[in-house]
Image (tube, rainbow, N blue to C red; front, side, top):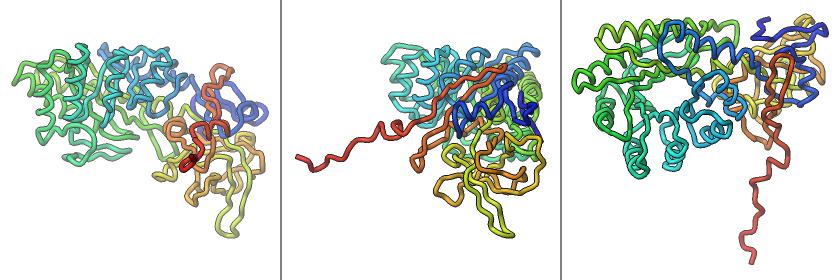
Length: 438
């Protein structure tokens, strides 16, 4: 059994997180419920930040908040001196409502609306990452209209893709994101930006994949981007000051995963950028990264209550929980794997192989297939590990199921930070049918 962060087993044989009994949490806030281990979030954040500080490299570590966006997590991110990246007006609004310092907010997205860009200017955020030529023209118009400066990066596709243990080099022309380095688009974007006074061009951003367990692909991407920076400097004299290498750092979901520590990723990235900058004879740019999953993924645990069960003789044993793909669509969407325990039977022997099924009206609504657990009974609490990233943020009201509560735990204390939706919440946007009346 692999426990994460502050998870432990108490003298009752129950799973605890942050010194709090998960059975107490289930009774207090109900299930399904997302529980976040703040100590683990803080540890990961400090691991990334300290790794840059130890090498005296100027950097920004931006929490990629698409992984989990809520007022409370932005507030904790601010406490840990993180920056944040947002990808919508909604995420930006939430960060601002949390009081997050606007100068440390970066705005991403391949189709930012005019309203969202105005929102970003009005909030005086720190940077906009430009994704296409249309956006360049929109930003020029808005900056001129407001007579306001805005720092910008351009997102590029460097011809490197990495996922888990594998990476490939490719032209990557077929991507909805960014300007391609190999076909001249990045050069065209540079030409349109580097002399602009109001749009302050800082450098480039790239993102090469997700759930990455090695550093070689980051090094290769750094080489390609720094190479382009050097070409621009030689041809125009422009010195890029920022290199954003994105995120994608992997976490452990199951025993098959072997992620690196934050300091290892950062050390190798710094080494690669320093080498390339020296080789090409340019100044070391400020390095930005964007961890999301690696900050909140394994800090999150989902609690469910066991309901019905079904035995298919010689085939499968099902146990059903009170949530499912409405709070964790990843298994149904792309066959994501998880581990789980019965939180109130942590000291009992695993003896029966189950498939944990959700309550949604879909045959594919299964959280975990073929997991061996103690004998499950009605009312038991299932804890699914590593659900902190893309669980709540991708949650839906499919089948008109209310979205779960979110609770933070730390040092023996617990706090509700997102309340569970009510039945009234489910219909609050609905309007009665009146077409044809009068």
